[in-house]
Image (cartoon, rainbow, N blue to C red; front, side):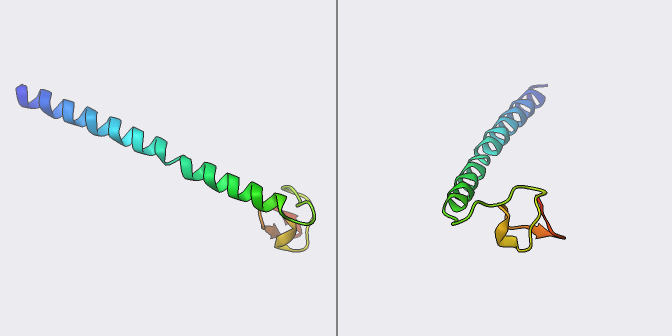
Length: 72
């Protein structure tokens, strides 16, 4: 019974550690968003939003022109 209690405590610590690590994993997303916003603001022409007509990847805010529409 004592071993089971210790095992449950270890499992709880491992799970809480995993949750903390996953929460820290969201920080790079924020960094990437800041990078994309800075890149969009440095363009000469305003970029096109999702589902707007396009001819080249560079026209879209996300650089993804597919079949004449901006995607993602």
